[in-house]
Image (cartoon, rainbow, N blue to C red; front, side):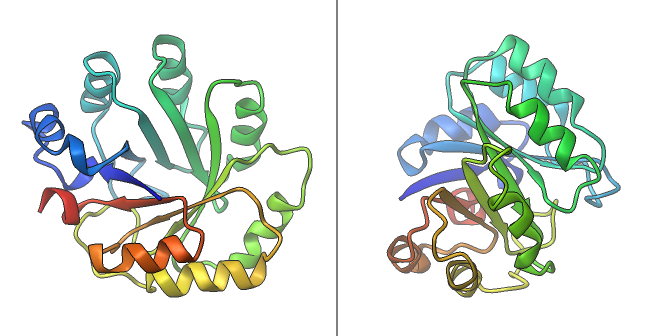
Length: 203
């Protein structure tokens, strides 16, 4: 199982330095980008996003929490080869547009996020639709846009619920929110491919 370090929990002023110091603790850098509408914050600033893309060779995992199509994504893809993954939520108004645009990309994996408060059955129409090339499901276990929260739902229990509903799913599973070091072994046994950690890495 791989780890994605959520930079929302890092010191935004010294973010690149912190990532260098913690480089042995993660495989991807998880970047939350909100719109202050779907998500009640803007997440990581665009300035920092560009800094991560332009000034580093880190593998970037973009997590969009927006109602409208994230135009920032198109700009990043034109100037970057270190954006590895991008996800948007199933509940977003622009999810179909996002999946359609992402189907044109060959060098970046497409993910669908689902809110902790949502019924996981919302994913069925996407997972069962051969038109969409979905590489991973992001199971959010906290409110979107804030770091160091208590999870709304246990990451372990959320993954168990997902596996029960979708026993034949063969893509990757990413779990995000409240993932402690003590959970990692059990999450790995539940076939989680990537665990997002913020406070557990940055304190």
